[in-house]
Image (cartoon, rainbow, N blue to C red; front, side, top):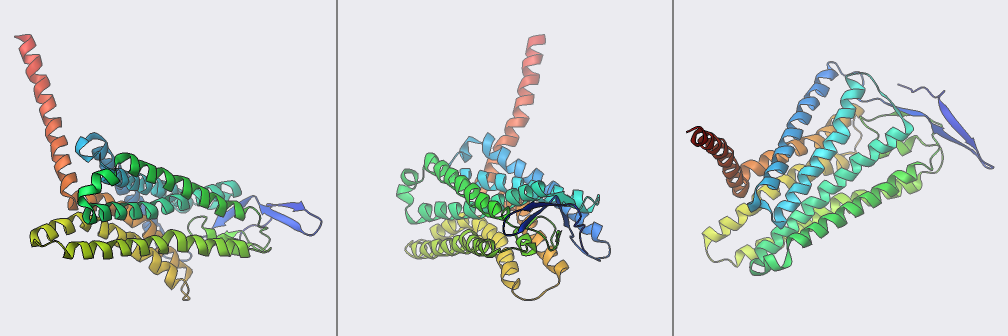
Length: 334
């Protein structure tokens, strides 16, 4: 499918004509029967993602027992999941359910920016959570001295500044490209791969894309794996089996989150070097970017005793308060 190239804006320079399109055409799934059902499924995924992440964020905010360094990181992960899905899925639904597949040049770059910023934050937050588990298990007596709420908040702030900075650089490099070949994007959103459509030198975009993939996906995963190697050695020094199991349970939720986020997306990037149909690639990447955000709050709610206990306390509080109000009103009437 070719996009309409008549809406190009040309800027002449001494050496060449710089062409900036007024819009891009997002192809999405092509010639797939009943593709709309897939987009409806993404709508369901988004609804569960919003409810789940708002629930876990609200629980952490309301439960004082969860006002710790660990749950500051969990709160940031839920926020990143919520914002990342909100940057991606509503636009997908607008484009493919309501057939608004043309997206302006500026909106395309904005879409790219927000999707990648929150993907970066998800990756770095999982690394911060691994650091929390490393300190908690390897240095239990010094945990509260090393990883205070202030320290974790500072780590989160640095992650936000870093994510915003590197993705701003990545998107800014797109603006130096001239798109004279096509404006049809073989994806479901304005992904960074659209630089391949440029007709001038895009080697810098190619390099920065590979560097950021390594820095924001592979390196955090390697560091997380190394942290668990250290945790494994620390657990071997614990003599009592019950204490080992208790310490391992505190890591279970995080290990599941890491596996759900990194394994699918790195598999997609690795398999990307093998020829595959565009539709298969789009479905795989879309699921890897949306399903973990939906499942993360469910896993943290079901697999973490502290969260379950906090939910029970909040539930009892909501039951007690109306009962107390009724008793006060009854006493006042008497």
